[in-house]
Length: 346
Image (cartoon, rainbow, N blue to C red; front, side, top):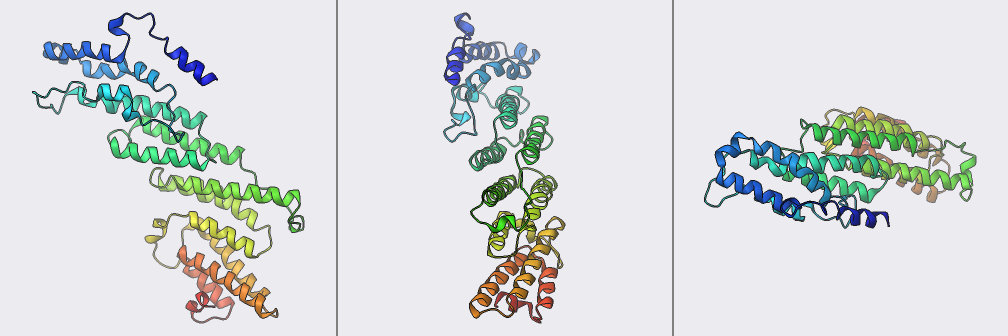
């Protein structure tokens, strides 16, 4: 395999290097002696600023096959290079100095090596449609932000580049990999046709991507996340597809899956009767669904009427979840209901 060949070749990189400099531990030991025996000279040479650049190639070599998008990926904090550098410059007999440049050695390597490698993996390996890869990546970044707050923040250029790459890679998937055919309703009437099955597969792929995008809540900015998830995915693809099909149980269930993806905190601070502006199209569609089901239930059997009422109640629950009180009032008025609470009890 190509991966095994690369690993084998990587082991040969330092074959022609003299023993004193053929590993990170050996190189590190020379600087530790310098720091201990000639501390003033060490400080004047600003070695603390040079060490990250010196150790970076050696660390990258050990991270050759490291990939946090894989379930079995080793925690980099348990790798040999991390353990070797963790206590660099630490002396039990001497208190740590606040201005000591060596204190930032590991954060600097995490910044320049880990984040840089992660950016490349996001651009070239990560599949935004993969729920497992996205979950692993999001979980890793949350841990990284907690463990290295001085590195993973909005003002850090390496963090900015990583987040920019995440957004661009997601947009590329939206533009190149997502396709929802808008078939005439008559074509989709045949549930066994190739067109219907293809439409369903593409629709659920789009809903899956929506859920994956919303995993980035708390990492990407709220405005960016709403643009990717709501404007570019929900309104551009999902809602357009729903509007080309007949109103029924299938559409209500699809809307439920969409609403389940939406982060609950988005609605906790809303005031008044309106939902988020980007969710207005979905709320209008749900109001249309509720009213269409009500009209279709007139003059049918009791069994069909009860089924329609159940679907109307589910549609209204989704409007309640999104704090779309204005649309709930509209549905109640359309159906001649004075107390909107009755909509949840019908």
